[in-house]
Length: 474
Image 1 (cartoon, one colour):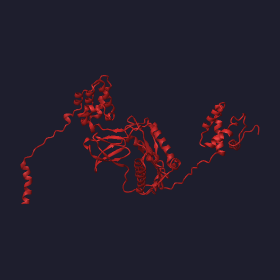
Image 2: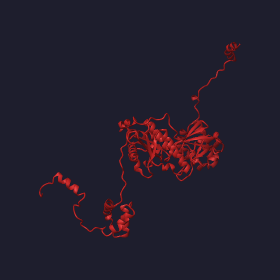
Image 3: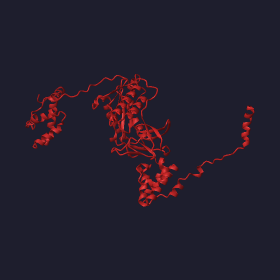
Image 4: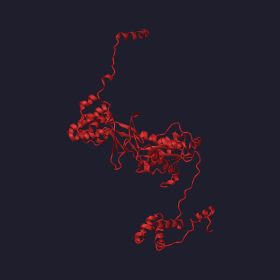
């Protein structure tokens, strides 16, 4: 009515009708009238997945007079056509999850978060486990790619942290783990995964390859977890961590806070989970390697050094995602960090200078063209000092001096302190190491050495001890 305000009911009616009824007619000619039915529709029917912007660019190529401002009109017309005449779309069926029934595993790439360990970028993934019903989550930092080893270690960590096992375990098709494997290796991997699930009395299931929403109970949680880690890094003010253990603790705290928000649901589902077996099953791959005359062995395109006394011996290696455990027969030796080959296919190196320094002292010139020379230096200061030595001294003298520096770091257990001294020398234009002064500086403090006094007892004391025994035997 003229002169009267419209009421709330009329507003709601208007807002509802304007979604389907145009409030006004077209005021200008339709710019797509001559081409939409004749050219655009055939393109959409031939390629249903074609984007509207690609269709518009093709139409502009065919009809240069078509202005850029028509793009939005094209997108609306294509959307309307697909709603009325387009192909049927896939439907996602929301599920009711029974407590204790399903746990899910997947991996998510975290490289874009810019995490650094001691200044070096960390290319890593997260193994992610989640209970479909209560939302319990567990995350484990994975240094390599998606593999059975990473899955087995992460899954078992999750189950033992949870205190029980669901009746069914769902993963993706493990296509990344199967990549580059021959038929026998793929079959072996399948058997190992099935055996892992049998150990915890879980039924193994997999979603269809390329159909992410079949793993929807964990796929959507990936984004939330990744966003939580990103926010926590921003609040921390730095994405640089001192070591891997500190970063793993950081991720564990984030996941623990997420679990605390649904603690009641988790406790309720924990009560109906299957009990765990008495012990874990293997979450590693076991390989045999031979230590060569080069003072190490090659495994998965990575060369590892070991003490030279092991040359010629066959070692048993337990290969984990982040480490190697070495055994000689049944005797455990030590643990090495796991290395990985470069993306270009070039071999990697995991080198401990302590393993080879005694041999380098006999052959110091071997350092000059050593294949793994850069990996030999324990800290950046040693590498930079060797570059300076090569610039200012003869090659033989430079190699001998560098080997003496490494020997000093090893024998006097002063690697970090010596690196600080070298950094100070490198900060001055003429700084060069004085080996005599360094040996004196890092020599053991005589006052700190214990004074050992050995008192020899007379032999008659032994006769006194043996006399009663001799009488008893008589």
